[in-house]
Length: 310
Ligand code: MTE
Image 1 (cartoon, protein in one colour):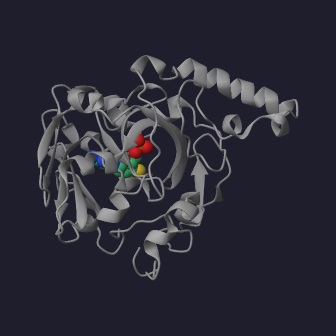
Image 2: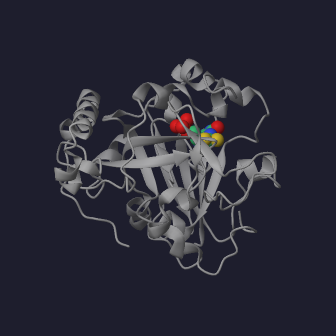
Image 3: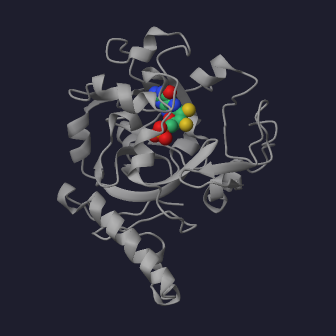
């Protein structure tokens, strides 16, 4: 699968939050008037209104309200409670900010976040993606495929995996004074997973700059994996030869595997992973293999026993 080339989009073209809400109201209206069947696919699939060519919300699910997306979070650098990040992440300073790509690459480079946002192929785009943990959400992310940035640094033949490293700054991140995880937060992917067009570096959601509690100023989003793979507030991306050990693998080797592909058939040792609660819903819904992105990503795991490689 190849990434779509889309025309460069100005920040002012990004759909403001109010328009998303208007659009939702319109969709509800359309559905109630049984107009749905008459609408073109592009509209139904949740394409944003303005100048954005790509949406990957293949199930046409409704967006999760902005308030829920930004007030119910996991970000242990700011506490372990779901409401802690929204309350405590104000202390994070997101400028100046650099992100370094290094390791098994021919052209290592440190990007200033603002320079990164202006880089030629790094146009802003909106992707509607589901994210799942024990709860789930559908979020209109603004970002670009990580592959585009990795291509800039030209991986060498030893590069087999990618490690993501979040900021370590206990003065700004009060939760790092506790040793609940081994800081800094670290995650990893195989290089081919990292190069998949659905693996995004995101800088915003709902047409806005990423709120601190969601991982400002830049985070990974990997929609077919459990949420913990999507490292927030990243400062370093390292291409490496050996499979990296993530913070969660270190904290609970029997509970958290390297792959963490969404898989309703593999239970977490302490809970079933067959169902998820969409934020805002009362009842749980069945969880889909690869979070519903199997058509796009299952081929990455051909021949691998995913019940063992969880
Ligand atoms: N990244 C960092 N740096 N620190 C964290 O504690 N938590 C992870 C992931 N990325 C986490 C992180 C977990 S467990 C989840 S479920 C998602 O972020 C939550 O993302 P959200 O709060 O934007 O929904």
